[in-house]
Image 1: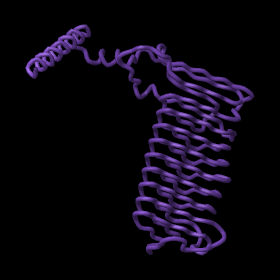
Image 2 (image 1 turned 90 degrees about the horizontal axis):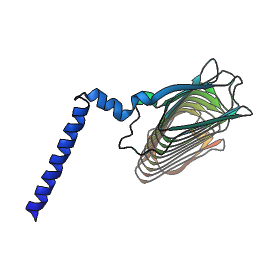
Image 3 (image 1 turned 90 degrees about the vertical axis):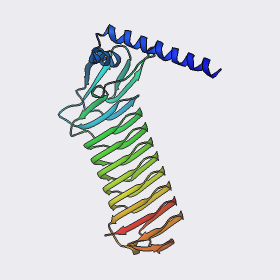
Length: 293
């Protein structure tokens, strides 16, 4: 029985090898042509959308593209579309811009989008201060040097980076990927959650910041918030360079497995009873570190 199975296996391998050689022969053994055909590079074309008025809101729903939003001279959306796969729709209603990038159902043995065709570039003028709503199944989001009202980002798999932004609130939800906020100022709240990934918040101001993670580290540096909360199932939390005094905050730090330190000293439970703000750090498996300037 084993001998028959071995013969069948060898026969299948030999057949596959023959088919592979025949297929390569059809391309004159030019692997660059094989790659181009698999990736369908010749089937992509550039496209763009413009609008005279500055949008009051951006709603982006993408399947597997990266999204880059930055400041520019005009409102403009640039992207690549595949003539066979891409399904794109957009609408501008009362200056609210809604854009959807999905995929038609096409049977194919291969589907691999070249990296340079995966990015959607959005520029907004300096007077933009509307809502930003982004949903992405797979892809990275990078927003820099713009102001906004409410920012909501939901990514299944990918990294989110926001740099140099003033907003009323920022909410980032990620299932797998890192979240990075640098030099952000909010009127009210920053909320982040990731199932698997690290969260970094640097040089931020606002009223309340809440960061949760199922598996991953949370690191905050240079914060000026009235209320700070970290909650991790597995990972370490570090809140460093908090502006103010320990006595100003009601501070509670707890671990099931791990240690908590405040300004270098090991602590546990409620360690300060200030009334000007709250800091709550909870880790089920990992360490908590809190340090004031």
